[in-house]
Image (cartoon, one colour):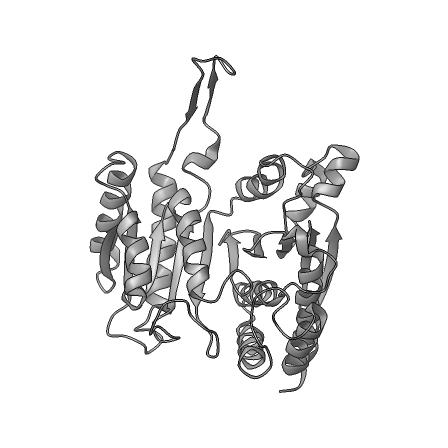
Length: 363
């Protein structure tokens, strides 16, 4: 019997609806080609809804999302809504309430894409960042004293529990074992690198480092372990990105270094990410944001959203369709596009989606 996957689709803000429409187009092509079914449930969440109703993520919608197999998101962020309202009310609430404790960010340079780093190509830009997604300064612990006075105090506290750290590390070690460079025939070792700041953040990253080595020694002796201070990691991501295989880090550092990584793989137009609950409902999105200045112009690159949808298929266990989507993206980049930046692709947003979906359907 053909399985039906229930997918929540959230276009969101700005160019989000445009790119998610192309991702859905490719999803439908994959379903037709590989014989699975998709039930899509569309949700109106984002800045326009907030402006109309004052709602961000209603409890009723959250309850419905729990019943889906996955969530496909376009973008959140509206120029008429104060920063933080939508991000906390929708993105962070979804991550916390659905316990999407892993942020997974592949960093891969496709052949044919110019890398801004001299003499670096697809063989060098090929690693993964695993970011813990529910702790750190994002928990909202803190506040103000004497706000709007000369003596104002602002406090925002980073918080981690051993449980949060352990489950993130366990996911990262398992990922490195199955999908590290040795497992893919691209290196002598499967390597997991912890990125932290043990010389300054001496409590939180002491916890991370102790847990990292204890878990590795006891359960994953086959995985090579490395450690980098976050500032050094940023330097080596530019100078020697080929050193990295799988990186694991906390929420704040992961947020920062994945944007740096995105530029090395060709920019936000190709960078996709996943917010994963391995035991529950996961959410998949392009990481580039809503790009409101391009809204409605047909100029935005949909490949990041399409790649995010491919990650969704892989996470759902649909490995062959996921691989075909990746092949299609690589083919279109290498043979069709003039560039990856908005307005520089040589094609409209919809035309790029058409080319990818046609490849998935027929090649």
